[in-house]
Image 1 (spheres, rainbow, N blue to C red):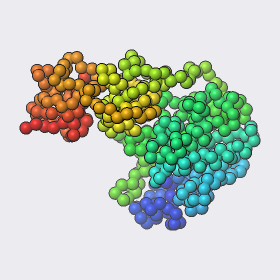
Image 2: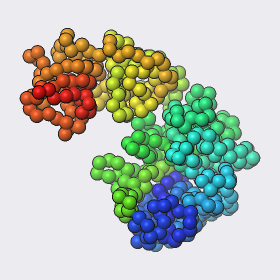
Image 3: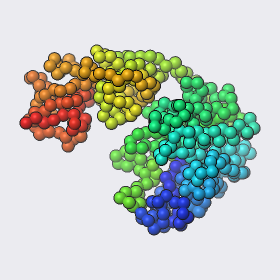
Length: 500
């Protein structure tokens, strides 16, 4: 089983519901472009080789038939299919299957053409009927408040509540929600006082914790398990938006996928499909390319497919390390003695000394250790204090980093002056990593910063900012980082100046 958002698979016939850049005859969208898009989509589907595949962002049944024809021509046929038919909607959801489709229906969330229907398809797995719900919930763009996704989750749960107790089903699709959205929901979208569609209405969280696999055999109806929990924290993503990773493509299971009857989940089989051609040379997702007002006829999708295996043989559990449900309170100093985390860590009263982009240097106490937040400081503000939930840490070339963290609570704004290193009493030989220094002058020479007869390597994150050899510098903000050795890191042109 798999799910794949194909990123706007449109045909070359004008219907009047198309997004502007997919109107035939505009923006280089024509039959030739459609043929290339079909080829690329078919390539991914053939290599993925799922027996049952949910698709999102398919314009209509016409382009679905063209895709099926293309798949048949290249030796990857799907005999059965289904597609939603929401009137006035620009895009639909669909299902491809190598097993017979017994019946299909749609769950209407709203009459608005901007609100997509949920597709419900029952397939026959060699005598075992299985219902698959294909979803594409409201995006977070264009006033994508959480209440709009809650409408999808409520409609889905309402339908599930009416199904027989032993009815086997699974849920998949693009939910436009992280697997742990209760921790990642942006304030500007939070019109529900923190209540979330995916975690709270779909019940992938019970109490303060996400549902664990070992809980599913005894889970009550309507409780669900997200398969992202099967992967290490740092691998939980299938989509990037401006470099920010997200886990919106999901496969979600009820308790009867673990009960040893009918169709069951194959333990530890959930994966993200990462064929090399789905990435650019720089490591970005190789999405369908639209640039300077034209479709460039290159690329695939801005999403990666996710998949998992299922079997008519009973689910086989294993002795796993018990999920750590107790969140320990620790200090930043403690993290320097750890290589990785076994559970989650609660850091109280963390103050942001320096924030650049999605990265930050933080401290708990004026005289305590600092640590670097890598790629997870989005919701934090410089000079503010927070409680953080930490899920992963690592050392990169010797630099201690928190790589997954979430804001639990925002506290007071803090005066930072006492947190910075004092240049007047600075000793380069006794520095520790992850400190911040302000207002220090010295000489740049041969890749090092010289001051008072001592020196330290200096690294400019943007190479073009590197000054001429022999320049006198004033460092407004510098991070004492580490890359095989201590170094002074300068992040932007505003963080230093060249003195005459």
